[in-house]
Image 1: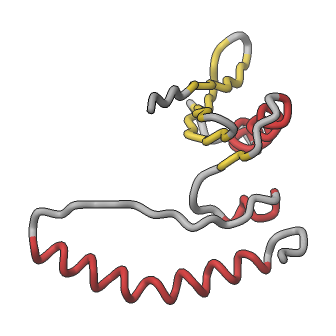
Image 2: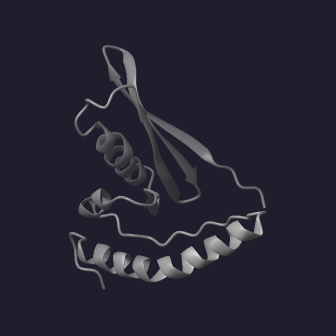
Amino acid sequence: MLCLLKFRLCCAYLNHEIIATSLYLVDGDTLYGRYWGAIEDSYDFLHFELCYYQGIEYAIASQLAVFDAGAQGEHKLVRGFEPVWRQSYHRLFQPDFQRALEDFTKREADALEHYFTECLAKLPFKHQ
């Protein structure tokens, strides 16, 4: 099956110069986003504007079903982004590293379950 990803770049300008961008990927009915960069850290709330608010507007205007704003970040909770479980797959060629990673992930699972539940409780709306 052929999968075509579309790229969307959102740019912020100051005096006709790009000062920040966020990159989004679109696949079917989902917007994946907010790969971000800025030339300075001094622009208040520009990160949120480019990474979240512009993505929300684009998803609504394009009638996309999902805006996946990425993993991590408690700041997403107050903006209505629910926590989502993520999986990653890695292959380690050093057996000692593989054993250490397996041990870590087993111990981390309980902590992540607790953290996920705490995040759900912080959402600005009731979760069923």
